[in-house]
Image 1: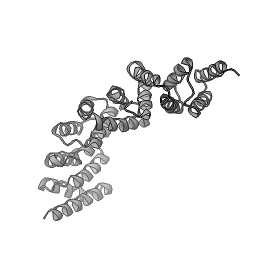
Image 2 (image 1 turned 180 degrees about the vertical axis):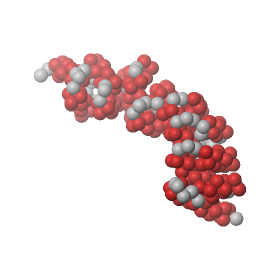
Image 3 (image 1 turned 45 degrees about the vertical axis):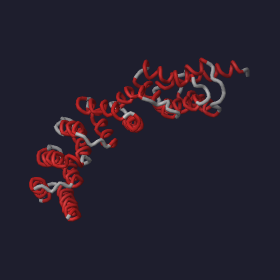
Image 4 (image 1 turned 30 degrees about the vertical axis):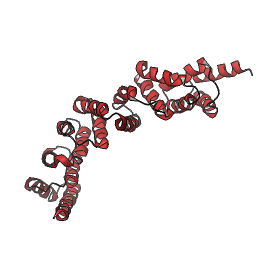
Length: 278
C-alpha cells in the first residue's frame, strides 16, 4: 500500500458514518502522532470533533492534541474551529486545546466554554466547568465577569453551572452575593440549590448569606432545598436569633425526618463554632 493510499484510507474511515471505523482510524493516528498528516486527514479528524458519538469526539480531540505537538498548524485550526464551528465542535476544539499544553488554551476559548455550561450533556457541562477553572486562574476578571452574567440571567442549566464555577473559583465579593441572592429566588430547583452552595462560601457576607438561607429554609416549596438550606446554615455558622429559631423549628419537624436531622446537625455545628471563637 502506498503512502497516498494509506492516507486516503484513513481519511475515508474518519469521514465514514461508522463510529467503529472512525475510532479505528483515530487510534492509528494517535499511535503515531509524529507522522505528517495529509490535509484530507487533518480536515477529517477535525470534522470528527462534531461527530454524533461522544467517544469519537473525545478520541478525536485527544488524537488531534497529540498530533498538534508535531504539527502546530492544528493549533491554529482548532482556534479557527472555536470561532466558526458548531457548539459541539467549539467545545471539543477547546477541550483539544486544553490537552495541547503550552498555553494553547487561552481566553479565545472562553465563549465556547461559557456556551457549553448550558449543554444538554452533563458530562460536557462539568468538563466546561473544569476548563473554566483553568482559565479563571489565568484570566480572573474576564472569566468572573462572564460567569456572573450567566449566573444572573442564563438558562437554568447554564445558570446553575455558572454558580458552581463561581463557588469553586472562590471569589468572595458583593457581586457574587448578588448573583446568589438572585438565584435563590429562581423558579428552577437546581439553580436554587446552586445558590445555597455559593451562600455557604461567602465568609465576608455571613449575615446576608444566613438571612437568605434561613428564608429558603422557611419558605422553599421543595423539601430537598429546605434540607440544603439547613446544611448551608451550619456551614455559614451565623448564630443569630433568627437563624437559631428557624433551625429550631426545622429540627422539630415531625413530617420530614431528613430535614430534622439536617437542622440538628447545623445547630450543633453553629454551637461548636461559637464555642471555638470564645
